[in-house]
Length: 124
Image 1 (cartoon, rainbow, N blue to C red):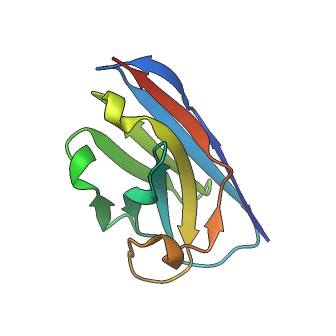
Image 2 (cartoon, helix red, strand yellow):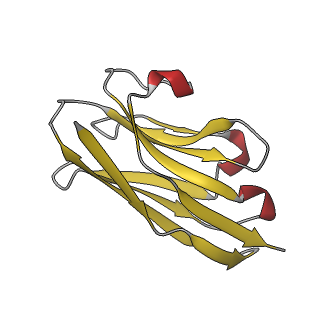
Image 3 (spheres, rainbow, N blue to C red):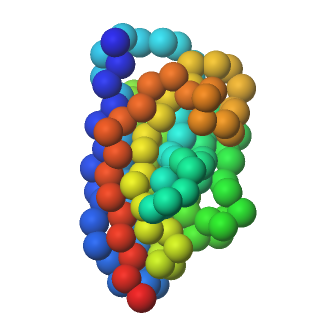
């Protein structure tokens, strides 16, 4: 079994920054992609950012390009999401997720393990 635990959410004013972190524990599963999904109130859960095992390939949703940065530390089994210039539209529950497949994939159903989520609220 794999456990993912997120931290770093909270309330911030528009224009501010937050850093989310996720620690994976449990069984090892070789090379895998880690990603952050966001679920805004009344909306579907969508991928915000993802990074492959090597870090050589990343994905960002158009809405966060230039503002968010994803990084990972494989020795620590962690992935982080630095969020800058936050906007009220960034509000939602952020989920850390793992895709044990080799390639970077962007759909929710590709991801095999999920954290419990952390709330991010951006006030205007």
